[in-house]
Length: 270
Image (cartoon, rainbow, N blue to C red; front, side):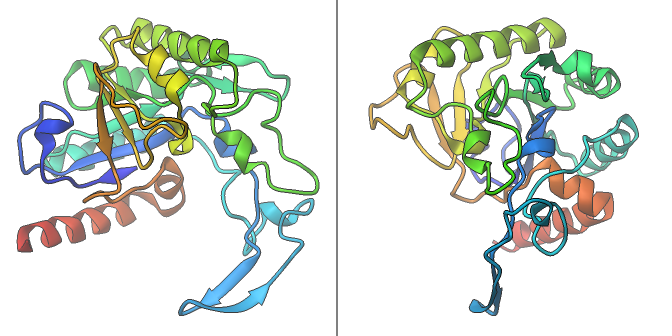
């Protein structure tokens, strides 16, 4: 996700009035397995075409029905270009990483193991204080239910911290993801971005036992309005422009430069 925010002091110790970029889904197998199709097509907000078979078999993987996966992970070369753009734009992006890739057999492969070159370039940038690393879950999905369905969308199972899941799962996923990320990046991870903006009181209770200081999400806890005492909530519906690594992979650095230029101009005019 990419966002612009007026009061950055509530998010991270970065100079005020500086645009911040956040990129989500780094390392997540959601980019391969979260397959669902678009049924309703509109023109100027008016429905013009409905295709009920958009989630059937291969339709959800082809244009114009494909809504999300599959698409590829950002490569080392692509990151080199992106990091250069951020540096030239005087930006310090937040990179939200899912700690493990979940494969077809439910195996969890740590991010540094699955994508060693990508992990290395991000680690160097993190140590050079060019980026901020955020926790984007351990799996990004409900393990065992994450594979594409022949007949329907599996999108709901690509949110990791549903309230209905056992407290043990919330604890294990939070603790393990923090352990993997902090061990590899050799610095505390203090920002949590819940996959799909889904999290609960169980997630919060688990986060309290970690170095996490801020939760960034469009939604508050789904099952509680309890005020958090030790962690700040950042509502990214306000003054934020959001995207995932999918947009960067599909549209490329030129699109990112154009989008940044528009946002900077808009911010300067306010």
